[in-house]
Amino acid sequence: MTENGSSTEEFLSEEEEDEELNTVGSQKSKLFNRIDVVITGIEPAVELLVTNQLKQMGAKINAEWDALSSTHLICGDNNQVYEHVSQLGGTIVTPEWAIESFEAGMKLNEELYLYTPTKDKSNQNNIQKNNNDLNLNTNNENNFENQISIENSDEESLPESDEDLVESLNLLPDIFSFNVVYFYKSLSIPRLDEIKRGFVAFGGTYLDSFDSSKINTIITTSKWDKTIQKFYNQTKGNIRVLDPNWIVKSMLARKRQPNKPYFSNKSKQARQKKNQPKKQKGKGRKGKKKQKKVDKFAKVYSKQKKSVPVRDLYQVMRWPKYIKIQRQRKVLMKRLRVPPAINQFTNTLERNTAYQLFTLLSKYSPETKKQKKTRLQKVAESKVIGDNVKSKKPLTVKYGINHVTSLVERKKAKLVIIAHDVDPIELVVWLPALCRKMGVPYCIVKGKARLGKVVHKKTATALVLTDVKQQDKNAFAKIIDICMPKFNDNVETRTKWGGGVLSSKARKAIEKNLESSQLSKKLMQEQKIRERIIKEKLEQQRLEEEAQKKKEEEAKNGKPEADKTEEKKDTKKSEKK
Image: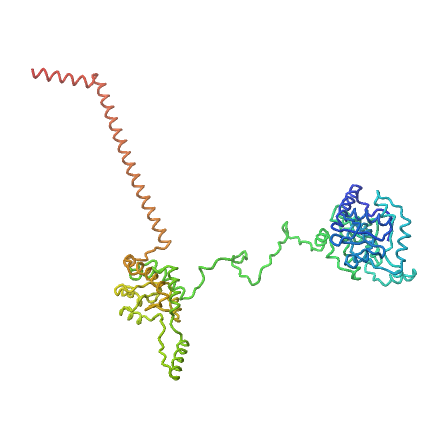
């Protein structure tokens, strides 16, 4: 181990060192942001030093303690300010916290530097002796750091002799006995001196200059750069580049920690490449190909050993039989021509009026078995007592197809409600015609299950209201006014055929045929136009040929035809004379 005062980095240039110093200075100016300090009970020389250092680290210094803004009290003596702050519960720290934080270039833990009041003033006397030897210079900050040394530990805690000190050191385990370390870019490592001392105490050795034959580890906080690569190449990869936390964690645990979590990124990659087995050279240039991992349970459907891609299997799904029948029936009802007697059940009551109707029906739902039993029991009990109480049946909705027909035929029904989805439909097909004949208002409503719910059954084909209470007569009259024109007096629903809706395939085929027929018509028209044009051209050619022949004949005879006609006229006149 060599502890010379020479620089720890021989491979760095002066420009790089200046850059590092500037970066450290910029970092220091933000260390004590949002910290308000009050200084009291310290020698004026130390106070001047601490104030300068705190200002450089970005702290605010106040003359008096403010409960709202002040955060720390730097104290060197028990006084009134100390007692006041301790009562308020503020953090009271020794001046060593500020000085050592400035030297380390990082904010140290406050708990290690908490001020504890002592009866003996031995500690303060030592501080006064050291401070008397200081030569203050406010312009140069580095002079303060080099000249001032403040003892932080009590006299009672120090060993009495050198033999006791050796014995205490021998108690520490030699966890770094095989490590020879070089601290690269030491300015960026916080609390470097403490780390070095601890490293040596636990059996390690460090060199100030890099020696490839001795050093096996580099401790640094910086990223992998050219100099580290140079060291790595010199040792042929037999070197570890670790973070300083490896030393700290090992010292705290008193056990050598594994290197893996503290490797730098490039060092990890290098070690992985080193530990990887070399590729086997095959006959070809690239060697053997890596075999892909194949799932044992995955089915293989091709020579390339590819699994089937995920597909939408909705159309391939096997549905239950009753769902198939439902869907087929619906499709048939669309495709086939439906007669008006069956098609009228597609014309149902609107949503709002249906809601009003069912709210009215819910008031007149028939008694349950329990309700009927309790009513009859009360009647029986009254008879036993001697009270002649007449129990009337409550006004309720009537149900059952035979009961409904009898009520309609006797004209006792005021309103008939029929379900639109009765199966078989023959049970209800004749009921609208009967209602129209007897002059009873009726309506068709969606859902036989909905009607059944009113009557405490699973389903109901039709319901009848025979009478309504006085309070519900207006609402009942409104419903009848809507139902009469829509169902009883509506002639279109009785004569309108349904169904006949073609599928998308059939529609496309018909459209294709129409397009083809239209095209054929267009072609025929175009052909006729072409033939007519050709005929006209032929006639023109024939006329032109005839005109040419006449001209040729005239040229041969030497006289034009007009002269010949004049001669003929003259001959005829002479003959007449």
